[in-house]
Amino acid sequence: MKKLNKENNHSNLETLISIIILNYNGGHDLLECVESVEKTVNCNYEIILIDNGSTDNSHIECKNKFQKIRLIENKKNIGMAARNIGIKNNKADFIVFLDSDTIVEKYWLRNLIDSYQKHGEGLYQPKILEKQRKEIISSCGNMINIFGFGYARERGKKDDPQYDHFSKIGYTSGACTFSSKNTIKKIGDIDEIFFAYHDDVEYGWRASLLGIDSYFEPKSIIYHRVSLTLEKSSSKKFFLTERNRLICLLTLYSKSTFYKILPLLIILEAGISFYFLKKGYGFMKLKSYFSLLQLYPKIIKKRNNIKQIRLFSDVEIIKNFSNEFILPQDVVETNYSNKINSIMISLSTKARKLINT
Image (cartoon, rainbow, N blue to C red; front, side, top):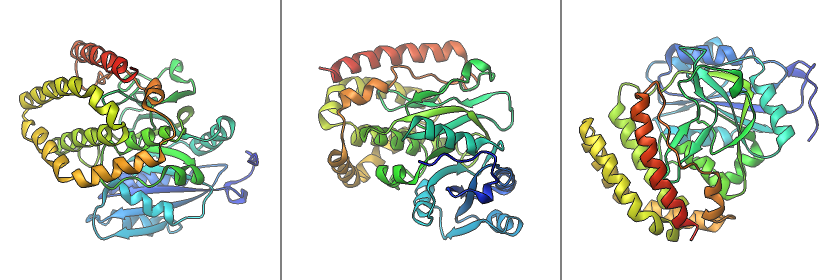
């Protein structure tokens, strides 16, 4: 691939990057996001704004203020799968999925492109700091646990040079994922079955089945407001996260692997259900199981499709999976997080041995 000239203005560069931003009642956050993107330097980019049926007119206000953006309006909210519309409606060389509640530093995109050219095909994410507390880490790359949990490395910790190392990760954050359009096409569409949450886990996992790795590039920096869309509806978030995690296990693992770990998964599910019950979300956990039954035909179809495209066995895939599940220190007390992580490590270690047999 042709090396780009850093000294050129973005309007003079040949390589085009499509920045696909989803919006659902984003309000002022959306305007801040696009305003920061407009300050991007040394890149030839376009902004595709896909509105998921917003009622606050934030997308209209954004289009009026930033007239060069391409606005695509959906009549209803179809979730993260709306990004597929952006994929199909551009002629770019590279694609970025960017949340509407982020702001970016001016060299964020340049550094992602340079990293891709240096390290090769893959999914890339920047260092993500909190929008509200810019010295606090939101994600230094995300990891997948053997039981399908996803977590952000170093979340809640103070940013530090020790977290400035490029590395291979489990999956890229949905807040910002960068890759070539050819790579995105190889992986395929974002699956509409998820709507929201865990879609990024599935996408990175699915990519790994094709031999496409995910990477963390700390030289690129953005800031993210956590859980903007559903922050007032934690029960819905819990429902979607738990249901979608189980969809990943049922579709991305082979049938043989799933049955090997099923006894341990049942133990884990019992513990999670008890925890949800204590927190008042027992109904949401039960609802996630009923939703799986309703989606069963789609789950079977998805599993069969995955079976057809898989290039690597589960034994190879889990080498990059984590036994840990680290809850961020800004969400739960450290002692409690350590206890959960200890139990998770024990169960995951046993599951890993079963998968490898």
